[in-house]
Amino acid sequence: MLLKENVVKTKLGKLPYIYPIPITLVGANVDGKPNFETIGDVGLMGINPALVYIASHRDHYTNLGILANGTYSINFPNTAMLAQADYCGGVSGRDADPQGANPCKAELFEVFYGELETAPMIVACPVSLECRVIQEFSIQKRQIFIAEVVQTYADAQYVIEDGNTRGLVDLTQLDPILYALDNRYYSIGKPIGVGYQEAKRVKN
Amino acid sequence: MLLKENVVKTKLGKLPYIYPIPITLVGANVDGKPNFETIGDVGLMGINPALVYIASHRDHYTNLGILANGTYSINFPNTAMLAQADYCGGVSGRDADPQGANPCKAELFEVFYGELETAPMIVACPVSLECRVIQEFSIQKRQIFIAEVVQTYADAQYVIEDGNTRGLVDLTQLDPILYALDNRYYSIGKPIGVGYQEAKRVKN
Image 1 (tube, one colour):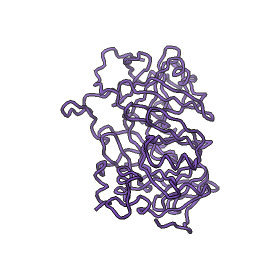
Image 2 (cartoon, one colour):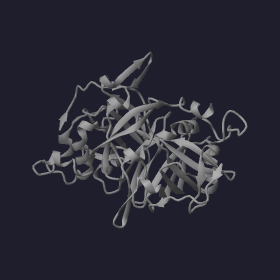
Image 3 (cartoon, chains in turn blue, orange):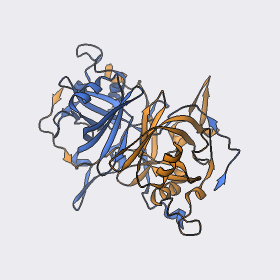
Image 4 (cartoon, chains in turn brown, yellow):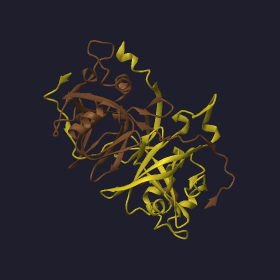
């Protein structure tokens, strides 16, 4: 190991520059009506069992529904849904008005429900995760909702069957929306390698 | 809102299909020596204050260093570093052997330290976050380390100055490695929009 004593790096301050961020639409029933919030602060906490989290500002309208029902959904829009995804990040469900300039978010989407019956999911999204909260806590101004995935839904056109296992097509077909703290949205690029195969170039 | 009663979606089971996943190299000093672990289970928990998390299996060697020092780093390799990033996800620091087939991970990288002095960072990575743990807990087989970002480092070539604020160039230049549960790595695509601008197409 070569320790570099004189590394010249630029300090940017306390910038949580995680990149890229996946853009998701998180769904919850608030007062019995579906609401959707655009969230990038989402991630994995385990594969088996399947655990995910979202971090949502405590003032967000969607949080009320998650707390009331103990359920939410994570829906992955594709790039054709960019306008709707951006809209759901900028307008609160509190301020939406069916007769006004801000359409209700639920009006934007066809919605379906799954096993939990209280986690609204978006038909147009290629993939949706139906989630049951198993732990909730607050940190600074955020509420963190850790959940188990109880069911994963996908459109048949994106599913590949390989014997008894079902998987999903590659990301170029799922066509997700990515984001970064430069406030830009991005598309996915190309497949560049396979897990646990590229390492051979280091070992050899 | 149109409720779809007869939606035909394929059920994939309890699959935590968050996509894409950012590939990072998490650094910690274990017994005084830098070790790096490839982690995609990383995300944002707040912007201001700057909070991030990683989820690392309790058996991972890197965890020992994080627990001992209360610090870690998150380094973002670019696609030129794919082989090393893949290697660090497949070999434990416990099993690395300087004389054997598995080179020590620290040997792969030039390392520098920042303000915390115990969080090793990788010179070759365009961006590194230096993190202090503020909360740690276990869930299932994972240890979750929530941390504040105390400093963000970037190579000068990736930094743009705009008056008194410093930011980073767009992701096509940072060239991150992405991953998905199909076990493929991906590159970033193209900029497709700007936050809070695309929504206009919904409102109008």
